[in-house]
Length: 77
Image (tube, rainbow, N blue to C red; front, side, top):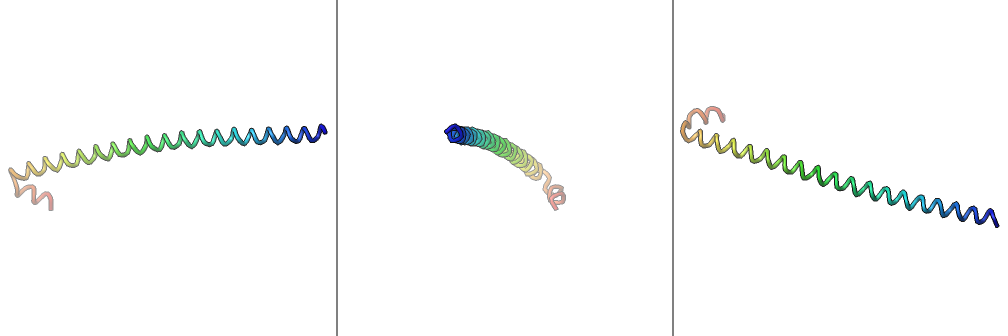
């Protein structure tokens, strides 16, 4: 009987260990998901900033080309 009880207790410990490991994995997955979301948001913000800068430069170039069209056409080519 003691052996059976020992085996049962060992199985319970193993199952609780698996439960703790599963909880740890879930926690790691949640943390990884949050990190991925933060990284994606930062990348999107950086891309948006670059797009805004490119549009601003394009506007400056267009405004500059309206005053001197010949120099802007030669530089664009």
